[in-house]
Length: 149
Image (cartoon, rainbow, N blue to C red; front, side, top):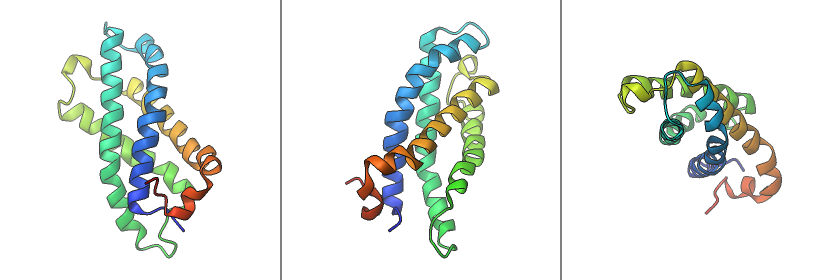
C-alpha cells in the first residue's frame, strides 16, 4: 500500500520539523560565516527557521498538487527520483515567496547562495532519511498508508 495524502503530509511536516529543525540548528553557524552584510547569529537563525517554516507550509500545499497529478499515474505514486526532482520547483517557489513577498525585512533576506545551501542540504538530508532509514525503522509505515496516527 502506498502512503496516503494525509500520510505524506504528516511525514513531510514531522520529518522537516524534526530532522530539518535539527539540521538548521547545526547549519546556521556555517551560514552565518558565509552571510553577506553583518547579521547577528540570531538574525541568521531567524532567517533560517523562517525559510524552513515556509518550506513546511508550502510543502503541504504542494502535496495536494502532487496528489492530483499522481491520479493520472497507474501506480498512483511517484518514482523515487521524482521525489528528489521536486526540490527544483519547490525551491524556486520558496525563494520567490521569501524574496518577493516581504516575509523577511529587506536587510534579513538571504543571498541566493545562502538560501541554496540551506535548502539543498536540508532537502537532501530529508529525502535520504525518508527513502532510507525511516523505511527500515518504521517498516509498518508503508502498510498503514503512510499514516503515523
